Amino acid sequence: MSLKVTFLGTGTSQGVPVIACDCEVCTSKDVRDNRLRTSVLIESSTTTVVIDSGPDFRQQLLREKLKHLHAVVFTHEHKDHIAGLDEVRAFNYFDKVIMPVYASVRVQEAIRREFAYIFSEDKYPGIPEIKLITIDNDPFYIGDLFFEPINVLHYKLPVKGFKIQGFGYVTDANFISEEEKNKLKNLDVLVLNTLRREPHISHFTIDQAIELVKELKPKKAYFTHIAHQLGLHKEVSKELPSNVELAFDGLQLII
Image (cartoon, rainbow, N blue to C red; front, side, top):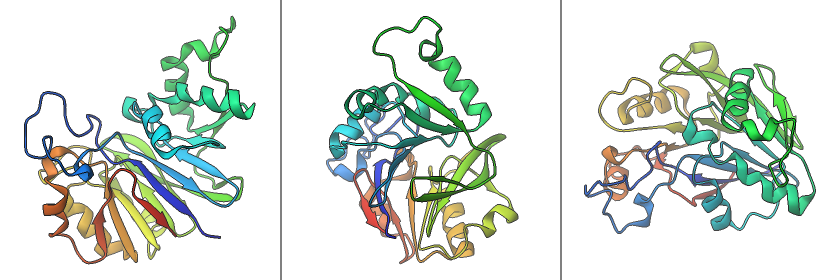
């Protein structure tokens, strides 16, 4: 079974361009330097799933002309990854479905807090209809897509990465244990967060991400969750190993 992967967004929490910034990246005319908040769309022949729904979710779905969505899966509870959850209302209406939302217990607590109106006993007409489904360390199916959780750390915050067939996806992390690394070795495609060049308390730098690619040996790797400090897409791309590329918004892969 082949997978189609679409990068809905590849930017960090502020996106690129950053508000009020006049740096060369934020003023670049190259569309690959315009980065919405990080999210990815996974499609098989029968199943469509989004990992994370950030503040730009509506814009991303309109750009991709997405007509059907079977589930939302969350990596963690930071605002740039959950803020767009309300937009599943469209699928509630057109597909007449309650949207399954896969998240850890801790992330579910944040969703209940941030979207309290969804869970109110006095339901307001037109609010999103979702069903929270708990994920922990056990693999799970969504339709014909088999998800294997990968436990990583975003500084001290537990975050879920995922392995789906030969595709691995790790965003918002700067530590992966040896046990979890073993799940990510020799993949067809590995996606890693790569924030900037300078050390960061909770994200991989570009050098750290490149070293991790060398260790895990995927056939191909793509970097995402990119800040404007990393540099221009066309310039950074020249520095990367032959099997590594910077992802950009709208990039599609067939795996």
